[in-house]
Structures are given as C-alpha cells and as structure tokens.
Length: 395
Length: 68
Image (cartoon, rainbow over all chains, first blue to last red; front, side, top):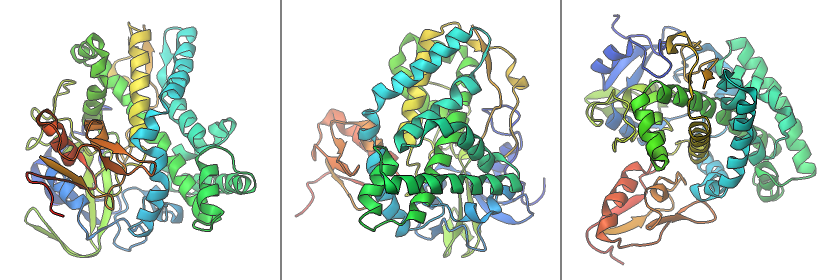
C-alpha cells in the first residue's frame, strides 16, 4: 500500500466495509489518504476523534475554499460547491437551520406517524398483490422517501419520476450527468418556488414563503437553494438505508428472529443497522480554516479533512465486538447522521420511515428472504452513498 | 443530578427527547426544553446518554444545583 491509501474504496458486500479499509483503520485514528484526483487529505477513522473534530471551531464546510477536498468528480460542479446548509458555515448555516428545525424536530415527526403508516401500507399492499418474487428497490425503497418528502415539502408528487431520477444523477452520476441533472433540478424548483410565492400551499415550502420570504428574511433564490438540498438529501440516503437494512436483517436470521420476537426492539435494531451499514461511508468532507491538533497530528489551515463513518462506527475503542451485527447491543452510537452543527436535519424522519417500513415488511410478509445470493446484488460504485440497484426478494 | 440545556447551541436533533421524554421535550421552534431539571435517580443513565448523543453538546449535567 502507498504512503497515503486511496479513499473512498468500493465495497464488495453492500453492508460491509471494503477490504482495503481494514488497513486504513489500523493506521488511524488520523492519517493521510489519497483522493481520486491524486490530492491528499486528512482522514479521521476513530469514533472519539471524529466527534472531536466535527465540533472543532476551525473546521469549515465551505466547498468554494481552494483546499476543500473533492471526493468524486461530480462534486466539482458550481451547484455542488454552493449547496445551502451543507456547504455553509455559521452564521448563515445556523440561520437557515433555525428556519427548518421546527419542521423536522422529533416532536413534529412523531405527529406524522399515522400519515407515514398509511403511505407504507399502500406500498406493502402493492408488493403482496404483485406476488413473489418482487424487487423492493422500485416497489418500496425508492418511492417511499420520495413520496414522504414531497408531501412534507408540498411538492407535486406527479413530478417525482423527474426529480427522483435527477437527484439520483446528482448524487451518483458522472461529472457531466451530475451537473446537467443539478441544473435541471434547479430550473424545476425555481418554477415551483415561483408558484408557491404567487400562491403558497400548506407544505413546508408554502410555510417558508409565508413566514420567511414574504417578510423579506429569505429571497427567491435562497428558497430554491434550500429546497434543492432538502429534496436531494431526502432521497438517496433514506432509500439506500432501507434497502441495505433489509438485506442485513435477512442475512442475519438469528438477529432477525430477535426483532420478530418483540417488535418493540425495532428502534434499537435500527440504530444498530445505521451503525453497521454506514450508508453514507464518508460522514463529512471539510477544510481546516485554522490549525487543528488532533490525536498527535497537526492539521494545517487550508488542508482537507474527511471523516469515515464506516470506520468510526466500528471502532474497537468504543464498540464491543465492533464488527458484529447485534440488534440487542447498547453501544449503538454511530456517526451515520454526522455530528456537530451539521448533523442530519432529516434524521428523525428517516428513522421513522425505516421503522414503519421494516415493521410492516416483517409482520405482513413473514417468510421474506433474498431471492438471489447477497454477492450477486448489483452495487453502485465507490463513493459517499452506498447503494444496491436491485433487491429481489421472495416469500 | 441537575440538568440544563443551552438553547443557543441546540440544533433540534431530538436525541435527548428520544433518550427520555420524561426529562426533555421540544418547543414549537424545535428547541430543547428541560421538563425535569433534577431528574429521578432511575432517569440518570438516560440523561447521561442524552448528553453524550447531543450533536451540539448543548446539555449540561452537574451534581449541584446551578448557581443563579
């Protein structure tokens, strides 16, 4: 292995770290890695060190900074470098976050449970009607997060095919596809925001128009930027976590039996799934805006910093039997939603979608199993969001 | 045990309320509210977990009542 190993690397199993990460973890908790473009960046692999750096005042999310580490060609585009919230530091980040927090708080999301149960029930009905075998990617994992975020934002669901496809390309496509898809999305959302400003409806976008745009706190273009991020962030991550979560449970029958024994264990099992599958692989890409001392290393101003969720979630220093999937474990704490001020805004919504979907899937289709061996499931590339393209199951 | 929460730091992650909704709640702005500043001994482990999980490190635990 070279002095600074390559990162990210491709998984060979959808829910296990790539084989090359073992050596990276052993060389952690802080080391240099090489990005796809040959540049080097600092990588943090320890759970404690990740928490420490993600709350460090000298860590910046400004993607326009020349030292910002770009982890895949698609993230070079202007749109990707200027994403609302994600690519921002305080104070603007904090202001935007305050506008959105009430609409994604645990209290608000708990109130959405009946509506989410109805939505999931419709998808499970369709799977049962379709009959065995069925592909759970197009029949559940992809459309569920899409419908939920559309309803929440007040985006017409009849357009979901378009932005499901476009947000997939932004996150996973080639550089050119990503830039084109991002511009298509911006154009679409621009028209949507204009319509909301003219006649605000009941969803979150209409509420933001009434509470923030009309009084003059937020401009048209700012709302477009915020809506773009909410739509993109809600799609790929939840969708992949659900698919990978189902695969992991089906591949661990003893653990699945424990969940079936008592479905009150499901929320704990979901925390363990989030820890274990680490859907996002990299939980942070940042740049140092001042020197940072960590674990005996000095990260200098202007140097890139990455945090590996895949490795920090399986840290022997803080997790007992770190590589074991155990739905009854207590030390389920993980960095899959990040840590610090940028921790995922949609985490409570994502958890509830996972809980309701897994609950109905396991109770209404009791004999569920994979229809093909796990190593034959097609996985998409290396990068920030792990994804299976098909999930054929039978029962 | 005494608990305080710094609402200036709070980012509405909800990890505290998920750990124990007897001690923590969220207001209409999504910000943390401490319902029980001096929780019962059986709640203490959950409160420590809430403080550990808080992404904004907004929860303060002390063994004496806060001054002022």
